[in-house]
Amino acid sequence: PTPVLAFSIPVVVLVTLVHLGRISFIGHFQQSFTWAKVLLILVLGTLGFALGTRQPISFLPQEGDLGLIQSSDFAISLVFVLYAYTGWNAATYMMDEVKHPERNVPLALLIGTLFVTVLYLFINAAFLYSTPIEEMKGQPEVGLIAAQSFLGPQGGSIMGLLISFGLISSISSMVWAGPRVSAAIGRDHRPLRLLERTNRNGVPAIAILVQSLIVVILLLSATFEQLLHYVQALLIISSLLVVLGMLILRIRRPDLPRPYRAWGYPFTPLIFILVSGYVLWFEVHGKPKEFLLGLATLALGAVLYFVLSAKEKQNSEDSGQKPGKSGD
Image (cartoon, rainbow, N blue to C red; front, side):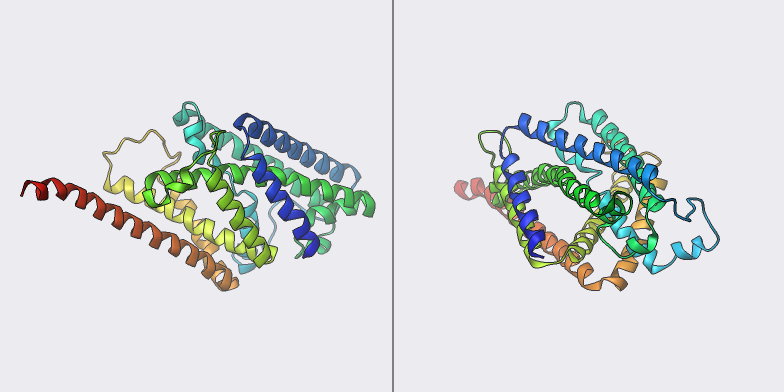
């Protein structure tokens, strides 16, 4: 654990400091590491197909695959897949900083998700093509194992280090997106207005620092697998409730203006809800502790929301009564 923390915590601190700077520099930082990560994926995948030993696998459906898909192991493995795509919706958190968001945000979501899907399918196909499945089974560092398989121990170690640096773009994107949500909460609820406070560069500095502190605490308190299941359970529940809320809102309030359209509605939201429920069902049985911690975190947020809303409603009513009292 110590070598992992010795790398991860300084990286979190460094990325946090970057995101406290000028927005233009943050943008260049994010773009540079993102394109470096894309290049790394392309190089690693190409080397896997070019230098790796072809494994006896097939990418086409086979007999027995349906039973595998219905198993708890497959459902739990989807937690890792969903975590890999975490952040696909991050563009929605930055609508205030996007020109023509009603057009550009959906476009960014669609193009970004398709691009990342192609990249991830390519790199995973290279791993399966070049590396025996038995060597990767149950291992979190499949990229390192695959690189060692077709580049040798020394080359694989170098590639593993590059993969670690490639993850900086993912950390950076969450440091960019997450505090914007916290700042929006601060704008909506007066007791949390501190989260809205920006520094001279116009970034929500307090929200960034609070999120980074939470990240460091989580790194010190749990293993990678525990964190992954905890975070992903929380994300799945949150996303499921958001999509379910959208369906309910459209039924109850068909009169509201809707500049954003849900492609394939109502089938795509229903499919999302069914898949999310399917994963959560097996998550409850396979990782109950992490699921309950995620549920508790969400419940804490819900309690805080209702307390703040009730307090603001009371303050609003009290301020509305003052003129009447003074008239008496």
